Amino acid sequence: MDDGGRRRFEDGIGGDCLVEYGDYKDDMMKAEYNMRELIPYFDLDNASVESAEDFWWGFEMATEWFDDATRLRMFAARIRGTVGERWRLNSRLTDFETLKRRF
Image (tube, rainbow, N blue to C red; front, side, top):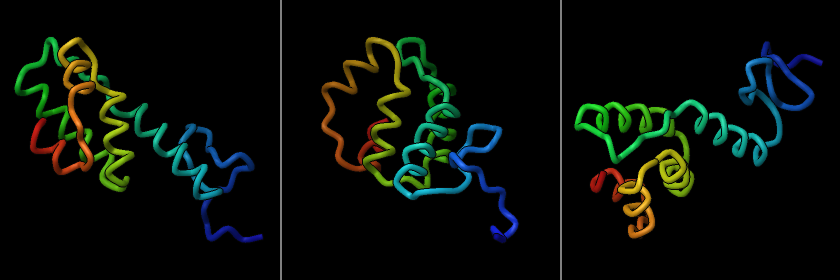
């Protein structure tokens, strides 16, 4: 069976552990996991303006194809430190544009 030139793996994961092909729901969960692994943790306790800008640029580029709820979940998973934890627990963000303005 011709797969259109793409590699196909039985479990939907290539040798590099990134999602390649398969069921949409499982692929989105695996793709979200893959993006989380690519985005570094950001420690708000020791952050500078430059490091915040670098983190935000990388985060925004890595998650641009995801919906708002997924992007917010990924952002919360990558924030570290007591300031970040307090900010994450006290904020009521519902969309990505609000997060972008506040961060």
